[in-house]
Length: 542
Image 1: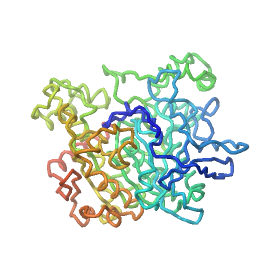
Image 2: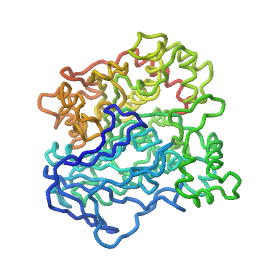
Image 3: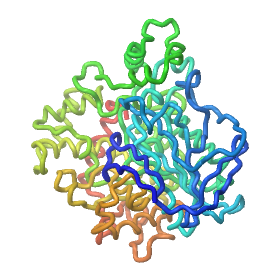
């Protein structure tokens, strides 16, 4: 059994870089797949799952390919090793040298039944990791357990994509001699790779479900609305787990960011700044891959490089596109944790601290805007180990950045598609150390339950192995069922409650918690809060 350092079980968008090699036992057979451009040899696990790690799905995005959309992978001679994870993409502020992160990082991992063949046509689960668009924070999750638990009836895929300046450097210069939102184009390229190659692993390119967490779930929303909602038939269902909606500015608002980056990299005075940047070594550019304060603000934002409105892939603010029905109409599962903001919010001592925190992260907010935010979130009951206005700060950030975007997706897909193909949830599983720390049920805390203990960069000694173990098969099988059937119910865990769709439940959602899972009404207070945030969405550039 291979063991690695584990990430915290409630890892935030940017702190957990899960280099989680497979924990399952390995058998001696060595399957080989021919992708046309390369052959790769994986391994067969004793669970009956074939595992391929670190397959190239695109050319290394280095040198002249920097700040451009991904290119086709280079052909190789001979059989390549696909038995180890490869480096993830360089994140914001990562120090070099690094054994786990690199500029050459566009790799994909696949798990599928050992018995599957080209004609098996199994449903495909494609996972887009999070990281706030500044890191690959959910990398290398182990998909072997969900494949085995499905009865060998699915294929699971995850991959890396460029983040921070490497994936989201924005300027008219980049538009002119490169590609904006390269990190999102990496994701799109991986989805197209799945269309071209997943049959070799037993998968069905006509039955792909895309599942994202946090920034990955925000990315799912962006793929739903991509090119104005154009359906390129890359997926037939979507799961958005705690969708992340940061500020996503216009390109013209980010020229200062490009200039700051170029100056630190030594290209500020170059006639052709992009050519200069492409000529630099990785260490030099990574030294410039650091945050700065938004103009007129006084502290670093939580997430510095984010997607930009490029007029093509992203044609408007996501809120507007979703409200206008400019998205692919497909079945959707979407939801959030009870305390989405607790891992990020300022430990505010006053309403002024809350206002400053919001303006540092959503820099176009005015004083009047933050006054209305504070009026919506007055002093709340105290939480352990935090200042007086932390509960207000946490609730406001959680609602604005995660919960209400999820609510928007559920309500808009219900309106423009059908409420009978939307399933909404709230995750409310309590772990003692999180409660004691004043964090409640924090952002993405459900991930280890979806993938199985030890498979999601989590602590194997977490409550999911003890007093919260009962929620694991319930959650995992809802997700597996949706991947297989585009509904969480057909293959749900025996004895698990029927999860009513938004239509069946009259707009209700499922409350997922240990020994108490069942349907609940979405509180009217939350509905009103989300209407409030919808009114600020343009000012927040969401």
